[in-house]
Length: 245
Image (cartoon, rainbow, N blue to C red; front, top):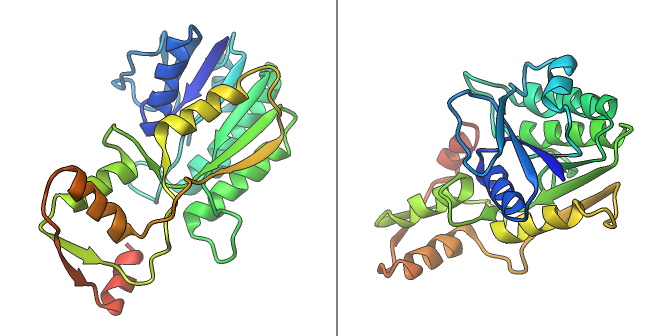
């Protein structure tokens, strides 16, 4: 199968590319920067999610059977804003998929985006989900919890960084986490690329166990053979300020 992976150099995207290439698929990595590298991809095509037109996407998707969209922006920054990526960019991509006759689109969202009082990240992710559900393509939406894996990206990098500190700041009012392993997430993508798999489904991907952030960091310190860190509580007023950053 010819598969395009959008966001091919991120935590999930790079792992998806590697697994698909290992299974004999032809993988085209769609990336934002021309200096991006993913050696599992047979091709690398530069497409900026936040700026590409439908015509540009159609050109990038020529000859492709299925698309896996792994792109996500945690917050607005100098290089991008979440709405341009999650809503405008994703909607344009999905329209191009429909126009190109793509057989299936697997789209990564995030667990809990449909809850009340969402963050801008969640609200825009949900809007992107809804755009895909309203499109004519055959779709699957995956909503993983915190994804942990061997590569140092995202949550894995954050937890390892905190575990390396001799002092562990405890943030108040943090929700419990159900981390899911990267390999399990990739296996789910592989399953939904099969012709006989179901489509037009939204699937949450939590892990089997629930932990606090402090527990996750403590476990990482134990795995590394380090002694327990000294815990200290962040005052609520400071935590509120940090959450807004």
